[in-house]
Amino acid sequence: MRKLFFVFLFLTCSFYSFCSSQYPQNPQNYEEQRKRMVKNDIEGRGIKDQRVLTAMLKIPRHLFVAESIRKHAYADHPLPIDAGQTISQPYIVALMTAAVKLKSSDRVLEIGTGSGYQAAVLAEIAKEVYSIEIKKVPAEKSQKLLKKMKYKNIRVKHGDGYFGWKEFAPFDVIIITAAANKVPKPLVEQLKEGGRMILPLGKTNYYQTLTIFRKKKNKIKKEEIIPVRFVPMTGKVRE
Image (tube, rainbow, N blue to C red; front, side, top):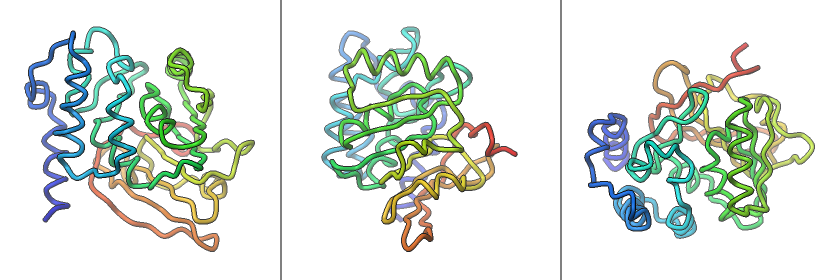
C-alpha cells in the first residue's frame, strides 16, 4: 500500500499545472520554500535519511534553473534546462540518493550531470563525485556553477557516460540519471564489489522502473523501486 501511495504521488506530480499551484511561490523567500519542499515533499513522503534531508535543505535549487522559472524551483516536479534535458523532481533526487545508502567514504560516479543539482546533493554526503555529461553546454555550465559554489569534491567531464570513467574506477556507487533499456557493461565492470547502482530501467520512450543493483561476487542483484519517467540516455547505449 505504501509503495502504491508513492507511485500515485509521483504520477500526479508529473503534471505541471497541478504542481505549479501546490504552493504560492515567492521568489524572494527561497529558504522558506526550500524548507517547505523538504518537509512536505521529501520527508513527508517517507525519506528519513537525515543526511539527504540536510543536503537538500542546504542546496539552493533555484540556482540550477533559469531565472525565468525560478519561481517554480521548489515545486515537486521536473523543470526544463539546456539541451532538451530536465532537472529531476526533488522527491526523485532524494529517493535515488537515499536508496543507495551513501557513506561519507564513498566514491560516486554519476551518469548525466544535467544541471549539476544531483551531483551537489551527492557531494554533500559522499567523499568524491565524478559526473559525466554527454552534452557539451550542460557539462560546461554545471561545471562552472559547481566550481562557483566551491564544491572541491566534484569532477565533471563532457563525454559518453556509457563508458564510465575508468581512470577513477572502481566506484562504490553509480547513479544514472537518464533512462536506459539495459545496464551498460562498462559501468558494471567499474562498480566495486559490494557497490550499488541505481537507474531508471526500461523502454526509454515510456515509463521506466527505478531499479537498484547490488554487486556481489561479480554478479548484480536487482531490486525494483517505483515507476518513473526520465529523459532517455543517449550515445552508445542506444545502439
